[in-house]
Picture 1 (cartoon, each protein chain N blue to C red):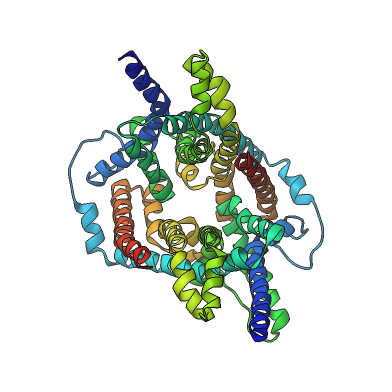
Picture 2: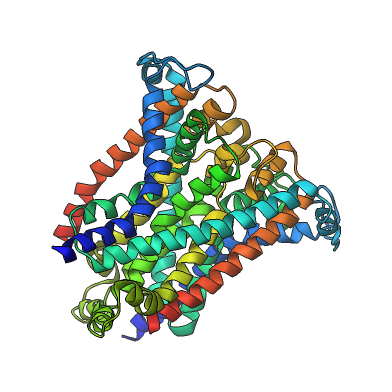
Length: 287
Length: 266
């Protein structure tokens, strides 16, 4: 019995501090915000509790909030699609076509930009994309005579910046999946006469679904909640649901509405995860 | 067979060019940013003219220097707290089977998967409401919360490759649990702890979103200052400090990469 009590104390003592910290800084704040999203007013001055659903109603009655949510989802879709199209082939080449020390070095080079500040990377794109900036000059070097390229404050700039920020995620997750595929499996298929596209569709793609799925989720979720990227690169074109939420807290001080919109966004994220997970699981089973 | 080999070689060539283009895309903005911090022109005008004046100016920019100092101190304190608390929890998960263990492990995912925007504003709500307020202490609370899951996962991965045999041996030789923890378990976990602490440092040092909502007027950290400088209309001074930041975080990562591999090989 003494051993059992001691064991219990050890477990509590070891896990307690970390989880107390997480409770105070993650779970309690979320609960507090949930509470205030149903309140008439935020925690300013003398707070008197007054229940209301109006902040959630606002989402369904105000068209621009829905439009901006769609825009955010679109932004997530475009960014994720670009990351897939660029990231998967890059991961494939890295995992299956390059060997030895080169592979290690190149892999490190791919994930290294990830370890620089995300804000700074977005800032650097504003310099590259400005009129008479690096991109403008580079293009005119090849094609003189075309009109100047100015991507400042455009949707395209947001997508470029976000793709740049999140591409390493996709390469990383796909690389890990692809590396786990046994080369002899591909060899066997080839020796039995499978064509390149058959090998790709029947072996390589099905076996890399875990990596593709992980990359998609890791990119899509933060992108639809992003706010400073569209703000800095999109300017007037950068209004998204993320920037609206941010402004409820920093500019207009309507915290309950900001809270309600946050939970609606969270619900959409959970819905997407819920809808895609059985599909992906089934996919994994049939392959 | 020969045509197949030829096609393969052409494919490989295309592949390498493609990979090169991807790397080009990843590094162009970073290189341009760094280059412009050494360019004389205030408005990023070309042709390039080498100058270190922006770094000299930086040395007398009180705001950015204070923010840099805050950033480093915050990251260091965050690293110590997150590494200790996270290692303890990881040890419990690796060595004990108990009811609620899976739930506790699942609870590590919300801090990683919920967008930082939502976590940040909810912290603002609670801290403001309860009187904790904003400032460096509030940022510390937030940064540790974001670092903890990563520390637990990294140290846990290290522990997973070691069974409890060493600790059992220590116990059978008469070591108390505390002795066996400090003299046997900690040395085993050490490479994982070092890797995790570098990770925690980077999480805090590069964190912008949470800090943005928890910064108090006059008390802020580097990314928040950079953001307000960009919004106000930036100068190459911002490039200079950004370049230094990138060099710091990338160096931390390179050390992390070396150590975590070192940890895996043993």
